[in-house]
Image (cartoon, one colour):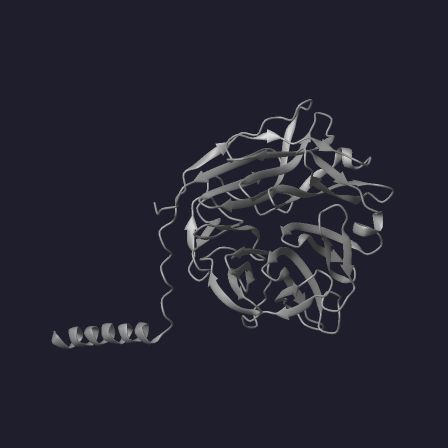
Length: 389
């Protein structure tokens, strides 16, 4: 009877040795952080009724903003924006349209500079139903004034999209894409934007076709992030563009191996830039200091349903917070350094569909989450430090 027992013992030892010499077990996911989320109520703008269609949030200089539109019973949209000093009590801003399309604009992107709002709005129209894009700027009396532009500035034969808006010491940056490749629109004060496209670094060239997803101000100018699809190859590479003045841009492919990659959101966190996007079958971070970038940590199992959607990225006083498509328990992620990420419990699930909207912003220990599923728009606020559950 001893021989079978001896053989069994030998098998146990061999199996243990195989496990110890094989691939390392993945690190356990940290305990989720559980902010105390509270719903935020936005008052209906005077003279309007209908459903709120919310699209973006922004904050700077102790001011908070939400933008979108009111959709009336007839389906007509009306531009709408709200402002708050504490993210608890909100007041509608007075929109001042300057064009026929501006009257029905949906404000799709928000940025902030020196405590004032800048926004991008649009409304489909014309013979071909193309989006008619306008920018909006908050003026001294607090109202939000449309800044009409010649059609070719944002539209025309080369039009693809106008995406995010960012404010910074040098003014304003819009990031987007044209048929010629990546594009930027810059302005010192928001009163007029200048298109920069089809120039070295931004234009499609022998190295591939670029795509810009987001932009931000840096200590030395502007940064945009996205991807490039190399000529004659499948699989994109993560890319960052830098510029001191918004006119001349330098493109750099980021390190991270040969996996299919893109960058979808970027934020400044102190002296460091943090970007998050797709890395192979999941989502991961990249960390930038000056002109040097390196891969950061992965966001757990988030984004494994390719291609992986990053809805928002923002900097808190103690780190960065990303929101991706997923369940309420797996859509939020927080990192103090960009290397190790912890799940953040959210009050609602985050949709993946492109016709839905999710946005986030934070400052200090206050964070806002916006989720619009096409039928109902909700805004949530969380104050104070985030502790594990």
